[in-house]
Length: 63
Image: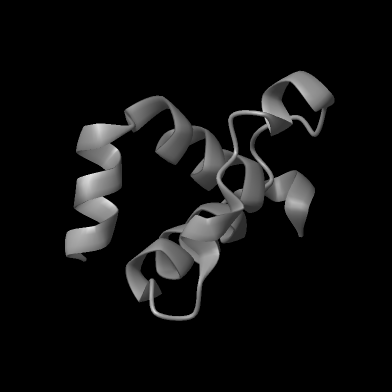
């Protein structure tokens, strides 16, 4: 949880774009992909994975 909050405070644009990208709410293109931080998806970042799952389950086009 601390890691997610740290990334949201320190790099809000990249954290939010990463959440949106992996939940399917951000279009997949090269320009936006540069803002995505794949290292935020490691196994220990449970809250980040939970938020992605929650957001993607509410996305009707992702089901």
